[in-house]
Every structure is written in C-alpha cells, then in structure tokens.
Picture (spheres, helix red, strand yellow):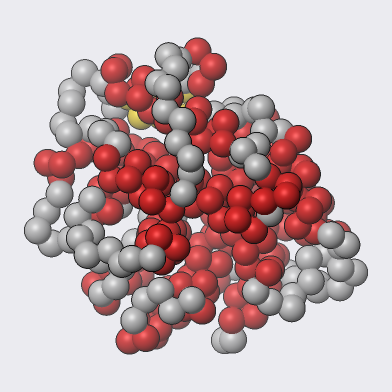
Length: 293
C-alpha cells in the first residue's frame, strides 16, 4: 500500500468515528503517526517492514465501512479548525483530545495532496463538540477510575513556555505512582498533548498563540492533585527495568504488533522521537520513556 492509502483511511476513520464512537479516532491518529515516522525517517530504515505490518494490522482489525470520498474540497480547512479549537479553549475538552486529534489530521493533510472535504470538516466539528461535552475524562486513584473536576483542584503554579525541550523535561520529571499510570496512561497524554500544542503553535502561530495551553495546565493540576489522593504509592521508577522498549529497535514494533495498547505505542513513539528531532538531539536512554508504556 502507498502512504496515501493510509492517509485516506485515516480521514475516513475520523468521519466514521464522528458517527459512532469518537474514541475510535485514536486509530486514525495511530495510522498517521506511523506514516509520519516513516516519512520523516525518525526510525531506522530497517524497521519499515515491521512498521508497515503494524499499519496493515490496524486497517484490517479496525476496518472502515466505506472509502474516503476525496471530492468537494472544503476551503480554508486548517484555519476553520483552528477557529473551532480556539472558540472552546476555556473548556477542559477531555483535557486535550480535541487538540491531539486535530493536530494529527492537519499534519497529515499538510504533507499530501489529499483534499479535506466538507464531510471531514463536519465530522471533526462534531468530534470537537463531543469532546467538549464529555468532560475531563477519568483518572486512576487507589485502583479506581474516577472523575475529578479540574476546576476544583489546587493550582500548581506550573506555567511553562511549551517547547520541545520543556515538554520532554516535564514528561521525564513528573512523578507519578506506577499503578496510577498503568490505569490511565496520563503521562503519555502529557507527551502527545504537549507535542500537539508545540507543533500547532509553530504551524498556525497567527491563529493559536497561547489559546491551547489552558487544558494542558488543567491536566497537570489534576494529576498533581490525584497524586495526593493515592494511598498505596509505588513510584514509577521502581517499574523501570533493564530490558527497555526502544522504538529504534525491532523489539518495540514486534511488541506493538502483539499488543498496540489502543494505538498508544505508535503515537507515543512518534511524539517522543519527533520532539527530540525538533529539539535538535537524539534520545539515548529510553528508560523514562518506558514508564508511559
């Protein structure tokens, strides 16, 4: 399959997700992450065959009902999507999933000649609205998935100038008990959410400014508060093993092929490697990255 096949598949998956289950859009993001890993050569060429096996597994196991109808291009799609996001920047919008989904889609469209249609815009507008209505999502505390109102938690004072370096530093240094992270994968969403904001500020600086930051800070406040509620603290560092999973090695993609964990293996690898590329350096130690898997 050529790359455009997977791109069109991702567009259609977003459309169909808007009609049924917005969380299925995770698979569109996963496919886009893998295609961009290959296109940007963020991984060694020897891994391409394994990554394509992962791509093919996704599109087979999460098949769309129809093919993407790439006609009737919607004029000024990126600016209109930015307008939607900025309009809703004062809500928690599932703590950033609207930004994550939009970033993946816009990044993919900017690399191809595939048109964004009115149907796709309507679908994304519906998904953004659904995320707004869905609330903050759950967080794992004492083995239970609970809802915490982000407006009702103490203010941490964390206000970063979001850059590739600061997002990576926050991911590496944020302390979180391992059993909490295994329950809800929130550190991984710090990575993908922060990455999405950094990229979109660069690509759409005239539209975005700091409008996308509030939900990111809300996530940090919420996680810091959740830590204080956890009674059985087993710190993340204790889970770090010598056998690290490294997305620059075949073993990572073999594991992903066996269990992709809702596509997070793909998105986390892409965001991590891409942020390092943007920062002008390469990761050498993946033990802290492994916490989010």
